[in-house]
Image 1 (cartoon, rainbow, N blue to C red):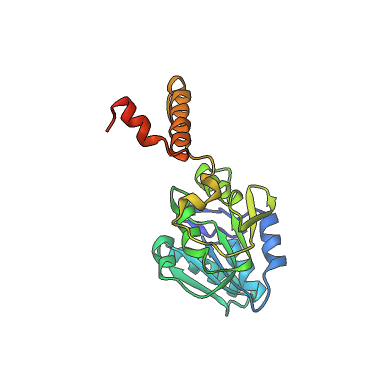
Image 2 (cartoon, helix red, strand yellow):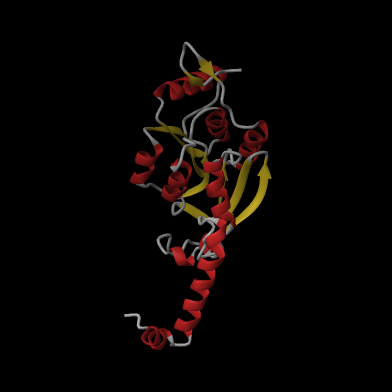
Length: 225
């Protein structure tokens, strides 16, 4: 079993779950366009599928090991390409439409979310998004966000990888008020428990007064400018 990761002195094997590799093998087809952040066994599976696949990784060593393995195993990698660099820089350049995106690159905050931000518009409606390692809180943030969005549908979980279908276009990612993840606004859970209820009650009272058009009269009554 080849080790695509780590150094030559300390090789490591951070492969995707076997079930995910089988899913990719069954899903990717010639003519499809796919992209992954990260490099390894999934890159080999994508190459063997015949899909037009791009692997984004900052490690040239990983890409060379994948190329060598494919060549020795007789796997045609004509449609496999590598974009070298940190994903936040590479993906910001944009690119063509995609049928499948596999987010499995840097897991530190905010990288999984940044990878999604730079690829979600490129993913076609009906396309597939895989978010790996959602047992890691920084990856789980993206998973939880997508669960609340109307244009993403969780199809299944395979181990700790979630698989979503993009069901519609994203209207405006900058509009926080339109995002399902912000439906609980205002969220005062960051406050100490003893002051949380009072803050929420005050907010509700202020909102009620504003709705009734009584904000200014009440302020005048209380001598508040």
